[in-house]
Picture 1: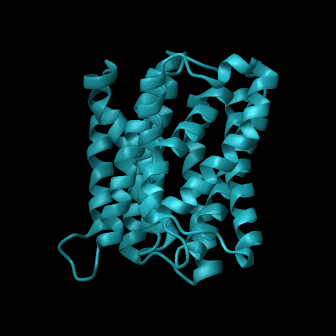
Picture 2 (picture 1 turned 60 degrees about the vertical axis):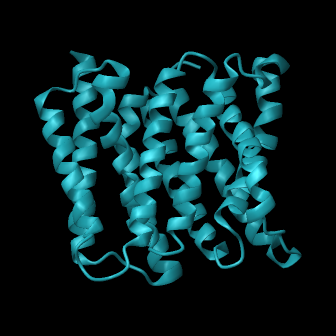
Picture 3 (picture 1 turned 90 degrees about the vertical axis):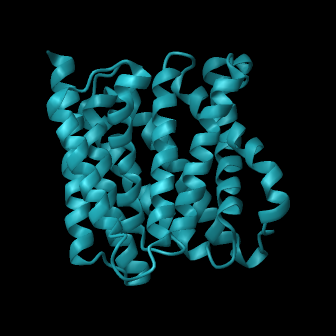
Length: 288
């Protein structure tokens, strides 16, 4: 499909961020009864079952098996551990703070681009990355009172997601978007399977509807993101990913009466500002 409708692509990305934040809110509601790995495994399996027939129809049965299994499995392991740590983190901290910590991922990708991707970042983006990490430290406040466990877990999630983004760039031309998304979920479910012997919580009948809502939102989020990339170039919609913090704050306040404190907002603002700057800077460089 041609990337000819930027407005539709941006709208789909905005919808994806709202849906994903709602899904994260349900994950936090499920946290007292289900382990993060149980929640994530259910998400991966559901997404795989929905995407498989779509991939078959669009790309053929052959596309259900990746050409480069080990690199695809490594990428899936990055997203599995990243999301698993995120779902664990929201057991301890509110969704907005956890989301803000995960936004360290683009900063890490930019910082590592010269060494791993061979992409020079220049002085301005280097300064932006440094400022962004200062924002992360403000959110963490490791030397101040209070339990910061959840923040460090969310930071770990951001690191794994950065590895996932780098792997995405490396594998960008290996398979169609739908097939790549299927590989991520399907292989992720396989990778998690051995751990479920320890961390599995069997879903109860009473939780059917909330689990159904969670899996529906998780799948819709993936579909919206895929749709966004189908209608507009990735570098154009990158800044709009940061609207997720707005939705995460709203969901956290509505469901849990949780709101970031003033220093949290300072750190969040710095991380978002630097992330958006880096995204816009990349767009301008590619135009040049």
